[in-house]
Image (tube, rainbow over all chains, first blue to last red):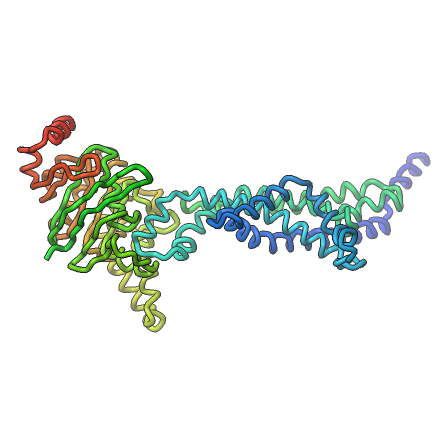
Length: 235
Length: 261
């Protein structure tokens, strides 16, 4: 009888510790969210520029953009983070990023935006090249300008086509944010793992997983809603 | 004066000569059918006239105004070409409607964009839009689609889509309306409704060029027929001349082979 009570006491919840864990995880989560949002904000438009670059009629521009996409997609994001952060200091003897957390964060954002813009650019390119030639020609014979054809006829069709593959990338990005730990930007997973070292407890890692799951779950719902919203026409 | 004159039109794709010197002229209200087997330059001819391809040689003259002359090496600006284009309309074989716009939106879009460039547009925006919409509704009534105004292209049959495409081309009031095999992508039972619309346009004195494989339609609706063979006009004449008394064995074979008579 008393033994059972002891056992109960032993697994009783240490609320102070729970509080400590949750506030640390929340803080990490907001950092992850910041990386996520800023990456999309930068990579979505930059991807368009790279996409047009790799479809350019000017050979050198096309070549440059295609090479960049090849290099960025062909190497690990973690490697790019390390090179972008440590590279300037070691190669040029000039650490652009300074020594503080702010500098590490900027370096991380540059690596993420560049990396994701390259992936997005290939999705855009596929979307744009998939639009039938007849759509452009119909616009032309109706006297539309090239930009009118792009913005009024082609663009929405491209957007509809690229939502599913973009959705995949966005979900991947949620989890990729954990890579910034390699240059000591303290995000969700770093903060969770910290409790293994400091207090010898593993359960914060499970909580960390729940954060990722909930967030990607919400995104999945949003993406589904967006696809449905575009269902009124077929391409 | 001829509404359209085409003189010595030539077009190569690399080594391949697709048009080897085409000449014809049309009077207002003429309906010209272009017949001949596939791969003989019929579609390329229409595409040249509509500035989708640039001819290597020749002239295109509308109402006495030279719209294109290959011997003049002028680098026409985009807006020049656009203005010239508006003399012509083109209806495609596979419709090419804009999928994200309703039937009404498809017919209104180009006209609206054109009006937007007008300096007065902002002041009279509402009124201009209302006028464009009224015209579009009228055109869609003419092609028998008043009950489909708010439908999207994918909700329509092929024949209905092609009728929308015709209304869309008419919205810009072209001098000459061109059709590139307008019924080739349609089931036989849907062909009739599209041909009926084209016939009614002919009756209202619209000038048209129709590339077609529908021989009975060419005979009944066109007043002028050209038979194209290997990038040239092999024979031209009235439907009676072409169908009842062709001069060339090749034309006789083609018409006989199709079994239209």
